[in-house]
Length: 411
Ligand code: 1QQ
Figure 1 (cartoon, protein in one colour):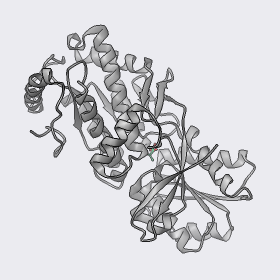
Figure 2: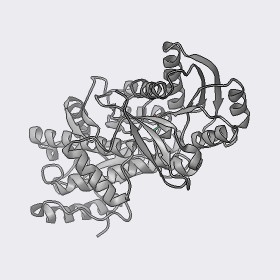
Figure 3: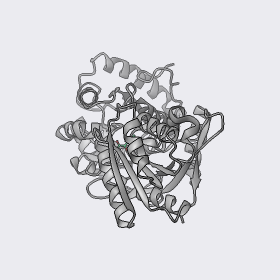
Figure 4: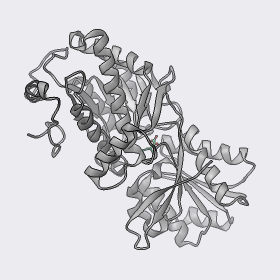
């Protein structure tokens, strides 16, 4: 049997006493997709729909794919454990593409047609600033799994995130760079000026550089759609920096790294959160080697849930889970555990969809969760409270094809 909205995904075996219920649920979802449920409440025989709004197409798809990988693992993992007190969850995917319009459309479809109880996404902060207000107006909870710009949780009461702010994460990479070269003094900063997250991240980096009394020799701007960085790279190299810090996305950022190295830059390079994907390896290949990237997740974190997540991920995708996949899994875990708690308090099948969305939103903000990211909770405004952060360095094999994120000690 195939999963109705994620082609190629196997249906999820759940506790056998609920297997029959599950089959009925799938049939009902099929009916629901053709628009015949026509009800505003979640019936007991229905799987609980959670919306996934990630970029499956465009240049952002490299990052979006890692989110999708993470939620798929979560759907199987939590349904195998019995779902929401015996009822399965069901992911409904809508491709946002890489821009705001696509994201707004995806949110509207998830909210009005798919009637999801909550949304995970979108991939970029740039998309979240446009689409999250729609969820807010419709009183549908949204959990950001990769939105790290300042101001995301503040979009509204129904907006939370499990992806720690750049303000918290980014400075760790500077600390690691200084550990590698305590003499470094001159810093060149590059950022993509057409992207909200990158603008937010560069402010944090630039402030951290000044606070450390380093010398910010130049700030160079580019677009996430650019492929040629010769002019900016040459201007920066002329100033002989010891450190280059780049806030960009995987494709543009990877190309910038490649061109800096080709033009002879030999110093340390820090990449921001947009570099946090192994898909960057194919962009800068052997020249990615040595780039430092701060992380909100380590596959090596020891806990029962991370061990289970990592094992399932490696079995499925044959590589270590990246940060965005772990964050996406965590967002799903928050929904699942909040729904479980809510159901114990007030039988969720008795709630109308608007009631369920509102009570779910209130419940999820109250919880403490043992996740692959470590223990997390939320601030009253919905920002993640997380304790552990890491720094990795890209290690490329000489063939330039395979590589890995090698974790550094930052103590
Ligand atoms: C954001 C990000 C992206 C680079 C992660 C995919 O952190 O847009 O906020």
